Image 1: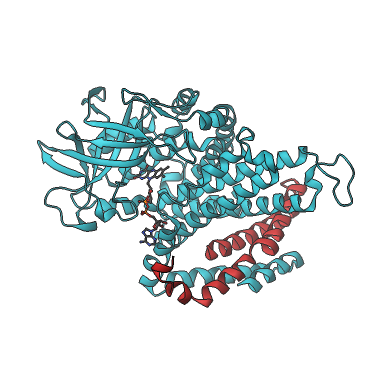
Image 2: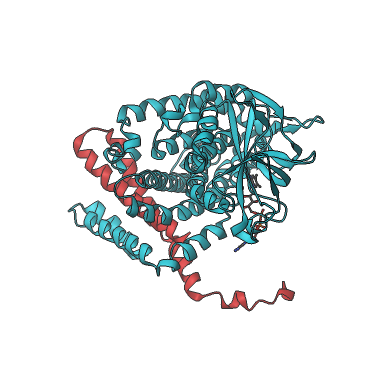
Length: 73
Length: 478
Ligand SMILES: Cc1cc2nc3c(=O)[nH]c(=O)nc-3n(C[C@H](O)[C@H](O)[C@H](O)COP(=O)(O)OP(=O)(O)OC[C@H]3O[C@@H](n4cnc5c(N)ncnc54)[C@H](O)[C@@H]3O)c2cc1C
């Protein structure tokens, strides 16, 4: 899951970069490209940071989970 | 069409299979696929979900109203041959493009599009692993859509762990007699095509135990004559159709093989090579399920957006009486994060498709490593995210979201199968960690992360403030 979010961020940066490049050519509708840059920003501010909590969970390890006894479930 | 600009389409032209590929072809195919989606597949989506597929006392299965006509449109339009090679009557288009087509169709009607997805999977498997005679005989019938395909892996005691498969295959007169029970077989029985070709995992009597003793067989519902016309009914019967949470239009069958002496099956490849053959097609199949996750998310987003622009409730902060709910900041937050994540999912899917296509290029080794690393992530992430996105779609609808009539609940239910079949999310994670990472001491993943890092710093240093800012956010999170 964590790598999924990271790859998503990578794609959104590519997308923003391409959108800005295409804006200079005038090939595509400018409003469409502005929207793309904005969705990239939203992704990087509001979605990608989810990996911070995921990684802190991973780094804490699963010792507690593994010490759960089956008869406690 | 930004996705088209994110990858280098010219690279695909250099691959001998895809020399005919062009920008115009992309536009033409996507336009047609869009029409099929909205005019043919969508009209029987919600009604098909409510009606469901049904098994009659005769053992035949009746698909929902409209499915047959929709299937006929796909068949007559040549759409079943999308990825099949030209020599078998297919259109031989790259995965990059078929993924975009699949997104449209699974958005329109996931239950029905599954029939197409399974048939593409079978075509892929046969083209890769079957004998020339088998390819020449079966692939044209599948590519024309006259016959459809299934994958028969799962048994009651063998789901994730295929090594415990028990279905038997006994050699007799140049073919095999298959007996045993398969469960959860998508489109295992239906009334759409004249014949169904099952790809079945089974064991020969003297096969070694576990993974190394599994073989793959072609088992047709009707045994074809040499000229391709249909002969006798094979010894396969549909015992029941499951009642399910979602994808209700698609029949999920319990199939019994060999109650009357054994179903006739034809070996694909060599005995005991079954799991290798399945592995060969696994990347492709898992990728397609990832695309389903994208598709159902996009659909849920579209419907939510329309609803949010229409529904009036409460006075938004800084707004006026009569303003639609999209003017409430929290609704805007839901809608815009959905859109933004769907875009990231789509870009990743298109890139994954491109990576699969590039395994046929001259840099095949590089792309082989890259795609096999990316596929479990694409499958795992796109399908898991579809759960929250379809759930947020219900949230935007409020109480109407919980009511079946609106149609939004269907996507939430349909999405739920995606992180389960073709390897549960846990299995995608195991695949990534054990097979793809520990086996090479993390070399491939480290290289990929370095590649991403250097691309990001290049973009960051391109002199544009907006991009620099975005790249900083990315590096902060890593
Ligand atoms: C609607 C539908 C359609 C389907 N279509 C087809 C089809 O067309 N053809 C076909 O052959 N099959 C099909 N399947 C079957 C599907 O692929 C299996 O259900 C799936 O592989 C999981 O197997 P299982 O149900 O036996 O679950 P189990 O294997 O019993 O898994 C139960 C739980 O245990 C976990 N688990 C199991 N093993 C491990 C492990 N090694 N490490 C970590 N966790 C583990 C799983 O992640 C899961 O959470 C379909 C299923 C459904 C519901």
